[in-house]
Figure 1: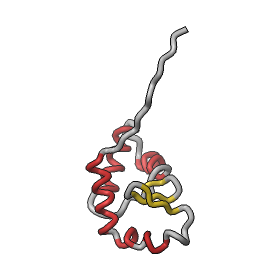
Figure 2 (figure 1 turned 90 degrees about the vertical axis):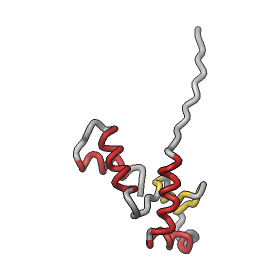
Figure 3 (figure 1 turned 90 degrees about the horizontal axis):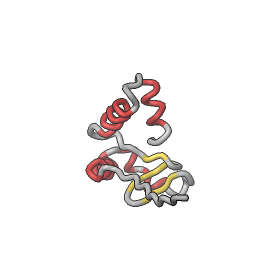
Figure 4 (figure 1 turned 180 degrees about the horizontal axis):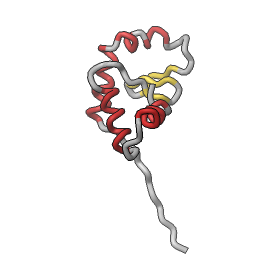
Amino acid sequence: MCTINVTLKITADKTFLDAVQMGYTEDEWCKTLPSVLLSLPALVFHNSLWYISDHLVIPCTGKLQETLFTLAHDILSHYGFDKTYGSLRNAYY
């Protein structure tokens, strides 16, 4: 019997995550998140990123949302809008 040890590591593009963090300082809604942290149990600030439950908060600045949509569309074999949006809705807020 052969045993294989495998480690799976999932990483994100640091440049994109830096842009998300910068976007938090520009997006008016994201600027309010620190003030509601205690009253919204699902809201978490971890590693300089905001999450609602396990959904990463993507600020509405620059082209972050467009970039995510384009990547998802390309990776998911060019699904239409509804299927692509549905896949993103499960991971991002």
